[in-house]
Image (tube, rainbow, N blue to C red; front, top):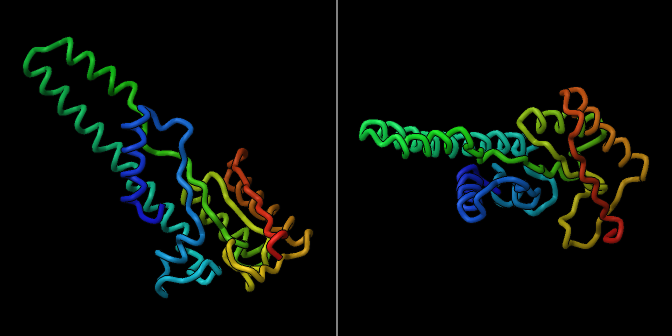
Length: 194
């Protein structure tokens, strides 16, 4: 998802089609952010966009998802008032049950931190911002940040194994510092493309 409205409409459609948002999530891709959310204009997936664009988008997505909940619940409460005004207790009870069992549109967000935007310290600081914004999973790849290439491009340069482990630990520390013991780290290798 590249915009809060798109996320909102996607989750409304999923809930309508499947009857649930359970086991659903939103994914923020680095290439999509570079292409559609950079102040420099459309960019290739080379980590040239602003570091803070992903945390800002995470916050935007959750704002729109909360709005979908508010809209749906507001409609249910209006229907409940109407049923009570008509004296239709059966309908009122059905709507009360729907309100009590309301399932949120808010789903987990997996956010791409690209190659960490620098060393382990930079990765830690950005991961912390992303988690504070609401990301429950961080995807990181083992390319050299300054040489980052899109997945379909040749010429990838990967970091030494120990450097990548340091960045993975940095993301883990950010989760732990913020009290998220079950945060997810998706560690991706581009070694075959290097």
